[in-house]
Image 1 (cartoon, rainbow, N blue to C red):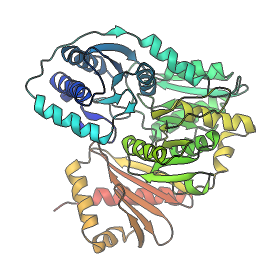
Image 2: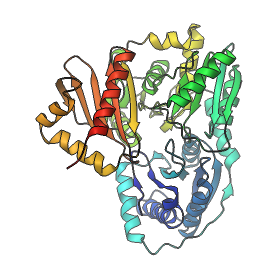
Image 3: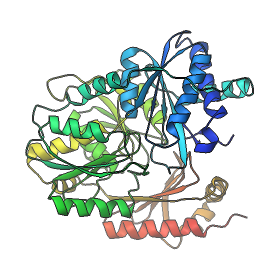
Image 4: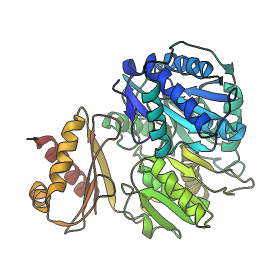
Length: 472
């Protein structure tokens, strides 16, 4: 089976997940829950899914394995991943989300949640070990579960409508790029609840992979066209399972996810912010909070947040460069306290950014430019074999001379970080970061520079260097 855990969840080709693999890993998850005392036989396990063509079949296989393992499958239908996790948290139930997030439509994935939130890297290792032990012994078969989709969505909707003051977005005209995200209907309902004039756009019956961290030019063209056509104050969207936000300003220009996370930290008056090394290096200078840097992936952000809590901190939250935002502490931004939700969510950061613009009566572009951040950019090379990525990283790490020679066309190495991938600071202050994807045959490149033009040039050069690398 060519499926494995990546930065967040199990991933692989849809055809490789269907049938035995999805049954096997669901059974392994059940055994892990029993083994660790996190659940007893007969307990409910919630199952949600995104709108990919393969997701219903994989969900049915997972529910079959859950039932065969002595648990009670609960069908939560198509809903945002944070809504599923929040429902599980409130019902003290583990859950499984069938989604490939932002990756291409021919791929899919499975995310596992304990009752208290996302699984850890230790949980991943234990589930993988159980899968190895159970291989060849798990019967495949589909099952249906009790339908609780409406209850799960209603609970999460109530959370989303308690974040801002009443009519907080009144007077704003906001476009919702619906495409195939499971958040598309809830976006409209929540924004209208806060008084916004909502314009639904780009609905699609077919799955469209929208990467909010590296927004494609096709997507930018759509956003810019809609912003001009409808006179919008902002546009919002999300990836397939709605754990990553997409916020664009009044011109249709997307805001970086880490900037949206920074805005949310200031809106919530956070005291500790945990974020990966790939998030903008200027975050530390733009808020009255402690910043903790981690490797890429929500499990590492969660581990950092839990450590901050164990040290007696409150006001603890985290976000990734893609904008997915997590809270480890309860916050009270308006009249109601919102419970901690230690899994990535797109709604809280979107609402925070919109509210800051509405409250100050500033255009979203003006709000964004008020933050003194270096200009960051990122992109990836698709269909870049993971073996080739590994060879490139091994070459760059082998000797300082290799790294210096590789980067000679773009600048002189002044410093480096190996927290995740290889993040290099050049002698003129620019940053270039090479990192293989943890769950897809892709090589990512992140850059920072003083201007947008300089960042684009450095990104183009970095991608060209990656493409030109030839392993021995």
